[in-house]
Length: 177
Ligand code: PNS
Image (cartoon, rainbow, N blue to C red):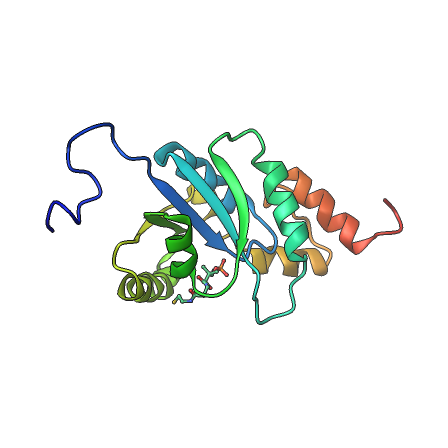
């Protein structure tokens, strides 16, 4: 790498590192929150970016997911919530982000995540994907499972932030709230 390509040449203050944490967040889980907490300690700024063009029918609308993420992360000063559509690397370029943050829970995640990270690197070599592991107790947790457990009447306490649990109940039983 030449000096002109390097993000930091040793002169002046260290540049700020902006990371993007992309996902569907349908809904946000405690595993996502764990990763956001880790990410905001590592990077100067973290944007949690909700994908808007999901193929499948979502449980929560994009606006609802953004509202929940914003409420749960409101005390984290360097975290913001946004939406994106299209290619993730185009969004990263537009935001001038250096890092894509992703969580890896188990070996089963690895192949898909590796494929995605390498494809994103091919599309935009300047953006690095950084993987973090959530706390072990969240290593089996996924939004899909939360939706399934909830729809089948099981308890989701401890799997999602309390506010998200409230939203799940409100969504399922709108007449009660
Ligand atoms: O939470 P998810 O559903 O695992 O997140 C997947 C996400 C949103 C990160 C991924 O689907 C994505 O980046 N989609 C945007 C389209 C894109 O850039 N595709 C090329 C990457 S291989």
